[in-house]
Amino acid sequence: MAMNDWGDQAEGLRRMQTGLSRVLAIASGKGGVGKTNLAVNLALALAARRKRPLLFDADLGLGNIDVLLGLSPRFHLAHVLAGEKTLAEIILPGPQGIEILPAASGIADMANLDVRQQSGLLDALAALEKRYDYLILDLAAGIGSDVLRFSQAADHVLVVVTNEPASITDAYAYMKVMRRDHGLQNFWIIPNMVRDAVEGEKLFSRLAAVARQYLELELRHAGNIPMDPYLRSAVRTQQPLLQRFPDSAAAKAYRALADTILTWPAPAMPAGGGLFSTRLLFEEDQSG
Image (cartoon, rainbow, N blue to C red; front, side, top):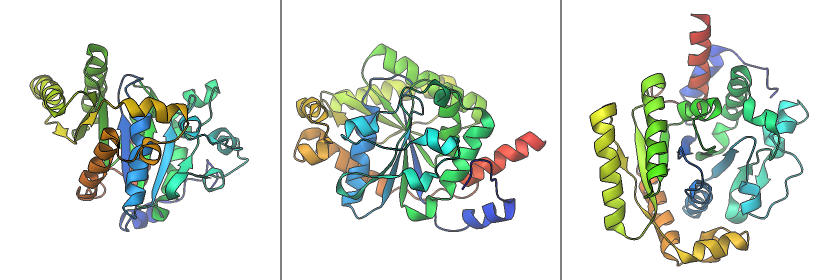
């Protein structure tokens, strides 16, 4: 599908009425909190449960999922935007049956797509939805327009946070913008790199209390990921933790998170989000 082929609204509504993939956005606000490792290992855990995930490196200008997995993509999103390839043509096979949509790395223009380009990308992603059970969006850090647009497109937003002031502050700022400017209300919190369940619960409770008081949000706790010394070794060898050290503490937590996600009901369309409904709502806003 070309990036400027929008389709008609009737086709969009037909898509919305069929079984499409669940769209999970992995966000953080701050970088360096383990978001990409979580996205990769979550995809592997879902694949092990006989689900078909597509992992989209949505950090468009500084993507690194391919590096984390030791892959060398020949084509990436820049080729799609240039009209040289379709999204389906750049998909990479990953470990244990997962598939990856690689971002471009070090191409400044990719981090500054205009609204029409972002919506065109969502439209192209929507065309792939029927092929997968889960579409996992590994978002960029910060609150750029691409992060906000992809968050709106998700059925569920998972916010990764560590027990440090900058991470907590930035996670709160991300949710504040999404709540105030875009009306999002449902966020799942994942305390990452915590010493134990007690620390994870305290971290969640602290963030939830502030969100309840100042944003009128009721956050939900998706589970904790513990600090794991094996993770750094897995990253050095460019293998996901679930593959390199499947019995490690964090690997078990990733599998538990996947089991939790499998219990989440599908949001009602169109209010629950979804890539195609997001594009339709955008077009309505522009024409209004």
